[in-house]
Length: 156
Image (cartoon, rainbow, N blue to C red; front, side, top):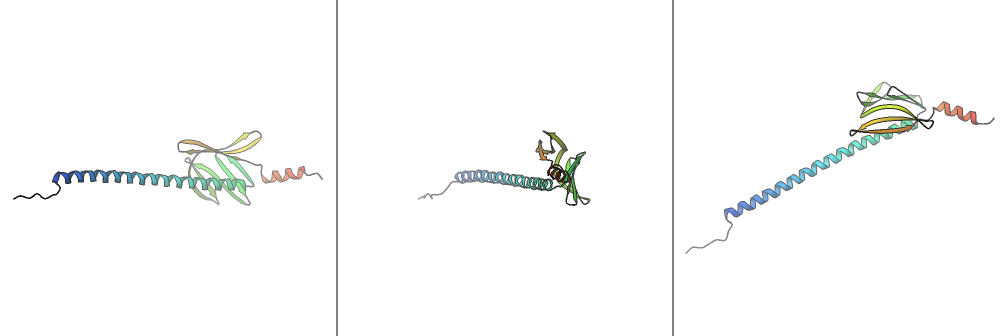
C-alpha cells in the first residue's frame, strides 16, 4: 500500500524562489533610485540655500553702503570705515575684507556698471547651471553727494 503525501515538488519551489528573487530585485532597485533622488534633492536644496545666503549678504552690503565703485571686474564697497570688495579670480567670485580673501565658490562672468534712464546699476553676470544669470543692483549716489544735494535743496 502506497500513500501520497501532500507536498510541493522541486519545480514548484524553484518557481516560487525565482518569483521572490524578481520581487526583491525590483524593490531593491526602486529603493536605490529613491535614495539617489533624495540625495539630488538634498544637494540642490543645499546649493540654493548657499546662493540665497550669498545674495542676501550682498544685497545687505549694497543697501547699507556709503558708496561703491566698479573698476575692471572689481566691486568695492565702502561702509562706515569698512571697505570690502568682490572680484573675479579664475572665473570665481571672491570677497576681501582686511586683506582676508574668501572664496564664494560662485562662478561669475563679469561685474560692470550699466546706465539706464539716467540711473546706474551694478550688474553681476553669474554662470548658473550653464545659463547666464544677471543680477542688477541700483547704484545710488554716494552719501556725501546725497547730503550735499539735500542741503542745497533746503531754502535758507
